[in-house]
Image 1 (cartoon, rainbow, N blue to C red):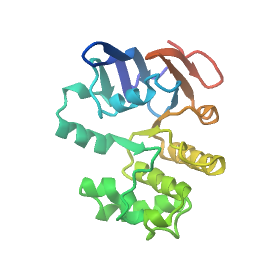
Image 2 (image 1 turned 45 degrees about the vertical axis):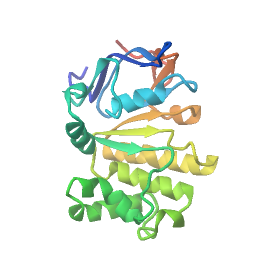
Image 3 (image 1 turned 120 degrees about the horizontal axis):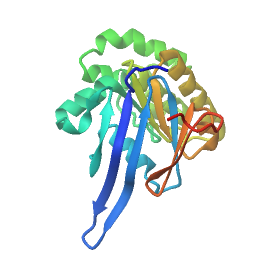
Amino acid sequence: MSTEEPILEVRGLLKNIDSGAHRVDILRGIDFAIPRGQFVAIMGPSGSGKSTLLGLLAGLDTPSAGEVILDGQQIQSLGEDEMAVLRGRKIGFVFQSYQLVPTLTAEENVLLPLDLAGDGYAGTARARELLSRVGLADRTSHYPVQLSGGEQQRVALARAFVSKPPLVMADEPTGNLDSANGQHVLDMLVELNRAERTTLVLVTHDRALAARADRLITIHDGRIASDELSGGAPRPT
């Protein structure tokens, strides 16, 4: 068995919100570790805490208790600027709503993470390569308004992988697409993930999408209800 340090580890994660009269417990003690290269799907009904969990894993929110360790770094100890630098180096994102900048072309949107890191010029060939791999070689100069929803999400996929992050996080990446486009985007996401040898953590309510993962973590009422490897086998402990 590999002794390599996991890319992501969660210990005793709690998240609650005080609303004056009462406290709302969103996450009630989450523990797991994700080895490098694994494709993990996180499922659960609406309100179960899965999107909150993804935000905590990415350092976009702060837990009430517990810790998140990203590539050996305990992220709660980082300041906002330090966390932004770590995210830029370690995490690619794919959102349900694409999150493309409307005034930038497809190529410029893909280059954005590299531009923010000061490496945009050197990454032009990489951006064009990824756009070609997602079937948009002839759309590099198009703006988001000129692209279909499926094409916009493919631009977002290319952007997530452009900086070669060790971890990609996706939140309902096919949620705004019809079934045909959703399947196409899913196929490309899985293909890119395997080719780039990244770790993929994906939040979804789509069972067909989750079935493509190596591992399925199910959240219910803020707790892990099940944690299984592909095929329904319980995860080894």
